[in-house]
Image 1 (tube, rainbow, N blue to C red):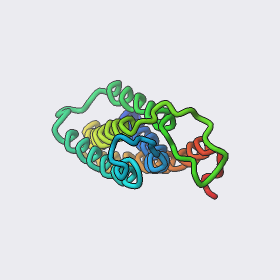
Image 2: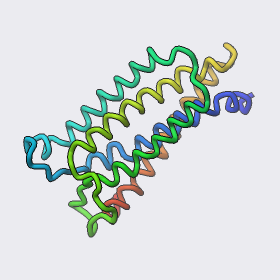
Image 3: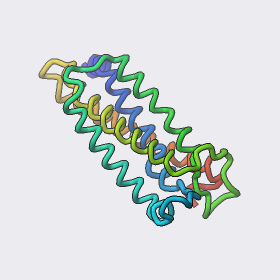
Length: 189
């Protein structure tokens, strides 16, 4: 019975898993380490307030994405649509790693070049990542039980929560590896 439910929920479960693996791999660990040398904008915003601003932007974007999921799409999206958008989100990992990640406090410096040094890049990346995180995560979780008959929906919801939790855990572990890559240091030290 459980295998049949997992087969019916394969695409939404993989979507929920992938959404949270990608998000937790870069947020907050890598995003909180992004610095900027921008001097034409208020130095307070691009300096000590940059990380809190990024956190606020993420939370606003995530909430907006969840709100949009309540309005669109009205019917369950196709498996291809869910999986394609979840796979496209993998692009956020290199985008954030190529921002001006601050390596102070550990290691010999990053091993990746900085391609996105201006503060506008990580701001846009965080907003888009947050909206897609909220939207895809909510769509996958909301529409998955509709694929099952009413007596199986509770078990299906539990399995979706399990896949979401596994995604959170895997994303957290991946964040340690990404941080080690960026700072060329032990992220646990």
